[in-house]
Length: 352
Image (tube, rainbow, N blue to C red):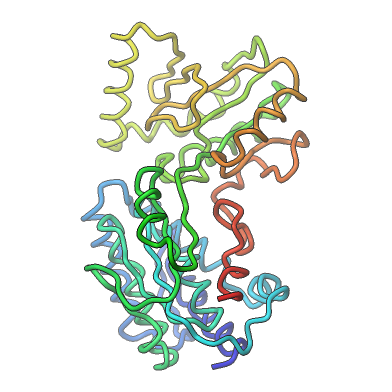
């Protein structure tokens, strides 16, 4: 199977996923192998929402829609142009996936297969429904994928390299268990935003997407703000008011109530608008329904602080302040070449 064939296969996957949108699910007649996979993925969407209270239908469809936009011939060509993937010796790569947001491990799955390797997948119990359905569709496109894709619920065995995503605690176990093989081990990361007080209402509204999509559970979700001394949060709160709807979700609402009660009993200082607590803190990872903030008075010092903590930060949202910044509202729309933890997955796979 050539690299061009693999690219075409994933373009077909993108066309298949394009039927599933937040605006509506619509079956198209020109999608190859659409029977019975269209109905099957619909059923798996329902199952994913049923088994994981954080996986709302809107968020699951958002994830599918974003992957359909990413898997185009143009994007794949641009992503793969810098790599030599034509004649690699196939290896079996184990991938251990997180389950915090829908299809969070799809990029690793895609990377292993597009590079020509075999993939051994260990999914999180929180996200077991969607990826196998997509894998079955891929196998319908080309039966060769039957031997290239394996899922396991038990202990992983017989693999040559591993890509594992987990917490700071689990990463220590991963580093121990996989010490003698090529590996990428990912730890906790969070995203931050730098505000100057000169942001437009549209930028602050877009920041709401960076903060609240997937209830803030992803590493690309902004969980901390850097704001200038004396920053007035009024315009910020006004801009994110449409996200008050999150309180209709019981799990989010329960977290908001719990964290607010803890902060009140601890006599912490914080701001509150009825659905988001804004609390001063130096930490990067804030609880659900809470966002931390820290004041700055000197941008140069702030840049140094962020650089010193770069290994804890996934995305930096700002407007013309720092290198490698992400525009407001774009953290949940990564490109194929936006690698988690800034570790080039394809380069790793290319060199196995």
